[in-house]
Length: 304
Image (cartoon, rainbow, N blue to C red; front, side):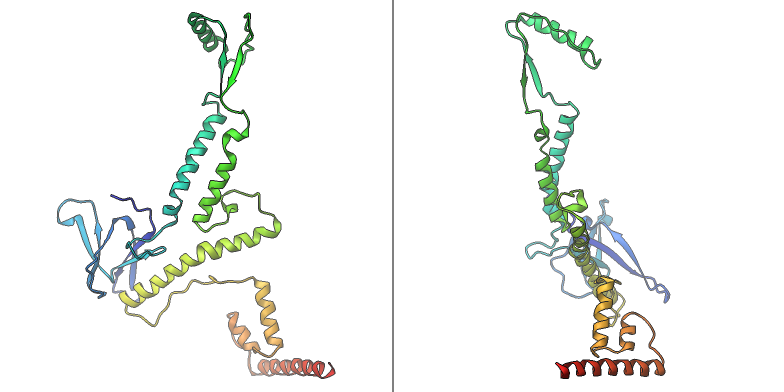
């Protein structure tokens, strides 16, 4: 059986019959959902089934199309399951964990990095030296004293530097993992390419590349599946607040420029900012200000 890495999500929708709270949503393990390929396209027909793991008739629970919200990331044509970030990054994550585990053992001296070569010694002398080292020297911090006709030679299995930890390789894997999840590497701890001028833009990029697409996907499913199919409210739309929010100062400057050019009125700008319209006197004053600005612009064009 092929393992599915979670490019999907499922939410069960249930009507309550209460006008104040007309529905309830229940999280469902997406890996337990099976899709019926013979679904006829009707919201009232069975499209999904949940495998409970029980024995008998309760092993599979049928679910209609208007009872389950099935969210897929990056839908594909040859499979009903979506392509999730973890499926893309699985091999990279596995490689990073293996490299990180090896580096931890190497740094903690759990991996032998060198050996002593004693020339012209018998196996009995080797055994005596090993026992003496383990009993008297290892872990005690004492200075070992060796006396022999020839100086022992140290055979190193590695260079003995940070290159043995494969830090550059681990950094590359972290960048690949961040790319699979549409995130800048700085959010996973890599700060080499980050400074004050780029930090804010990277955070903004992470929000628009990783959060906004997923939020829009969930909002579309809530609008189509919950409001349209389950509740029968096709005129309603679910929208996240401030999902496409821009910089506050840029928005103010844009609205001020449009107001000065006469493209927008004061009440229109107030409506965009969620404020009530001004009374008639205030509206007249705003119109006079707009006329004054327009006259000043026209005089400058004539003088030019």
